[in-house]
Image 1: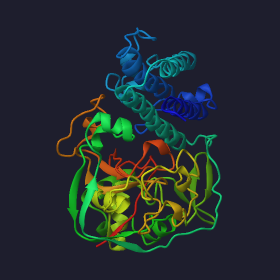
Image 2: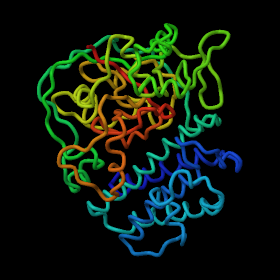
Image 3: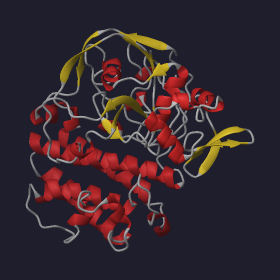
Image 4: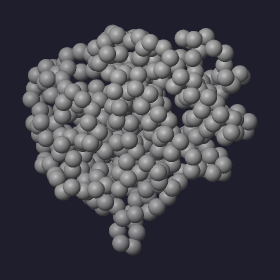
Length: 425
């Protein structure tokens, strides 16, 4: 397919998944109770449409607002998080859906009617990938709220292929981190957000990193050993978080008659010991590492292990291949941590892309020489207070991710699809 067809196909795919996540929800389910980790679904719908309207249809074409008076509602930095739940702020389903459908339709027409120049190709990708981010937040909102599994969910079909467990030794030396600066470059090469730029070369000491993510079964050993009650495994911040949460196991776990269970959307199922532990905070990951005599990787170590000294964009090479990963809202909590060997690095690290976002030790900070892209708040308001996570999750859109991608979460977050792997000390 040519560039226009590829862009339209991705816009249509993103639109379809948006509808899958929302169309089966009743009016009562759309009126969600306040939770600081999610947004009202109808606000998500209008907010993602607003990006297309503002940056493409209005700034580039000069059209008038399609929903006059609602700019401040859809702009996430004008209507604060708590205000989105106030009665009368977000319009009803009919109005929000009509606005969304009108903007997406106008965007489709625009793609086919104009010559694509690099700057506009970048804007289209930016708006689509921004919508991808909100699709993932809609997915974890359904988990948070205990709603039925979305229609995109498919069962894991095990082909029996497995990689090796244990550690891989990553050589010391120079490694490329991040992506090159320059809009024209990544309009041609793919896409990068401003937090990935400008790229640089770093020198690392050798380290040993786990080939696999920490599994439910491994994490359950910490829980069974009284790890949540033993202060020696918890940092000061971790103890404060643990005590405030009054937790003794991961967020969606409970002890049933037959053993540990976990909640997947609206169903309690037996905990799969081979699958990656998910929905754990940074503090829980840190405590596990202390208990196990390990540590979390730094951001630079994680990226070096994923990219190798040649600086490849994905663990297996230069192009995304969705058949090698679990992403796009599929197979939640089902995949053994040693599965998917086709997606491994040449050295043997498995599932560094997809499955769960992986905690690193680093604060989320700009790279030297950082400059903002078209939307100045995409990264800047998160710098300093968040931890860097890497690799994407089962809920992340596969076109969005690459090994240089940086996501930021507060260390106390355990509602998103968050897990980790460890490094030897």
